[in-house]
Length: 276
Image 1 (cartoon, rainbow, N blue to C red):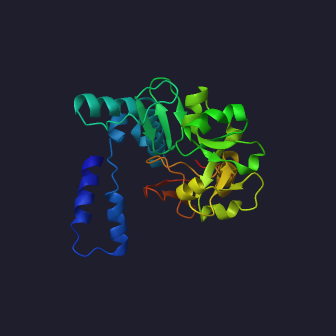
Image 2 (spheres, helix red, strand yellow):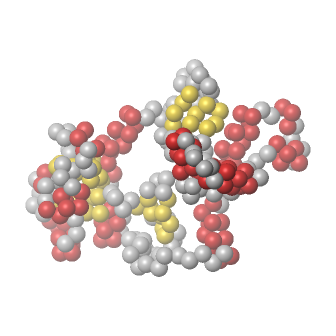
Image 3 (cartoon, one colour):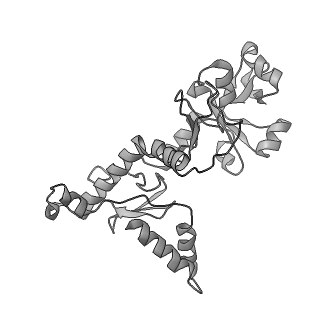
């Protein structure tokens, strides 16, 4: 039923002769590429013997969120791959570039919510936009020979490099320590890190070519601290539809709204500021 409603909404708004700007935005969101899978209804509970007269809309929403979380954590990815690949014969991208840097498996999936690759064989996860700092000559030599990485002028060690996390794993067989991980932060986001201890401007020719002028190498731990300062995780929920965390809480209306997929759901805060 939810799929049919979603499709009818999409057809209705796509066929509007002169949509308003608000309707155009809604059309863009409807056509963003999300396809509902299923839903849960009170009739489903009643069929299993539950007293639906004593179950509120908030209770149903909570049930739906927990079922979605459980499905995504356990069955979503393997079910999608089996049905799409083995039953529907959807084609896959044929490339040798995306392989596990640890076990060389091609059984790789990309999680858009985490922005990380996951290996289905050895369970390794890595971020293709994360860089590891290798400082000592004996550690950086293999990368120098390959021409991999960018110079770390601020390290104090000759030949120190920022190298892609996957290349680091490929050479060492392990993930880098988090306090040795960096991100290349480009302008204008780099402004907030200028003059910050531990942050280094990208000055080499290849780095400027790839990341632009005024870009900085910023420690991963520092970017995570900045993200935590922007968002009080005790008070901001995770969207049950898309997993987004860019959430507006409308306390007066008792709802939360996801700015990524525009889902709206009941939301209230207790006396400690925690959502429920």
